[in-house]
Length: 245
Image (cartoon, rainbow, N blue to C red; front, top):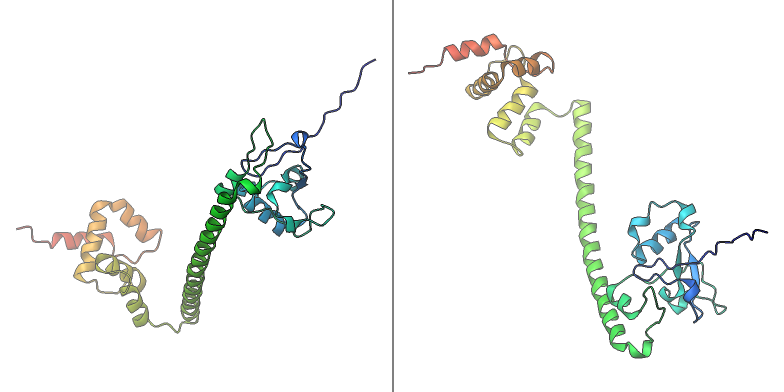
């Protein structure tokens, strides 16, 4: 007779640098699966546990992952020992991690009475992190306000362009504030020149340089892409008028 072998499913704590397995537990430590039905709280579990790279893991796979009770504060549990619905793990921190002695061969936990110094350092570290968090949040709020202001300006500009209320003079001034020199001359030439326009000396120099660099590309820009450029014949005439002496 063949005996059917059953594979025992052991629960392992996935909290960063913990790795405690329930078969080694003798002190009543419990294991709790990720709250996949509560996406916001589940993400908080991942972040606090130092598992940010798991955010794209499927719910089916994440349901088989656990965090042990050592990473939750006492206020996260009911008197019966059951985990509360709004409970989240303590934030992963190197100092907190040093308070727990967990390796592949042991599940010993450093008692609070022998780690007062570690707790003090943890509190100091948390206070420091909270201060930095407030600073970063303030910076983020300022950037968000600036972004909203820029978006309003862009929206107004788009409305003016669409409705035709933005005249050429205003547009030229706006462009001139951002660029200058040959770049400005080239942009204005493309935007405002027509076939009957007279080209300035700077514009002629730009066109001759482009044509000299690549006549084929020059013709491609003019004929296929619709750039407002003088004909190659005109550019060649300008070359002929150059005094080489």
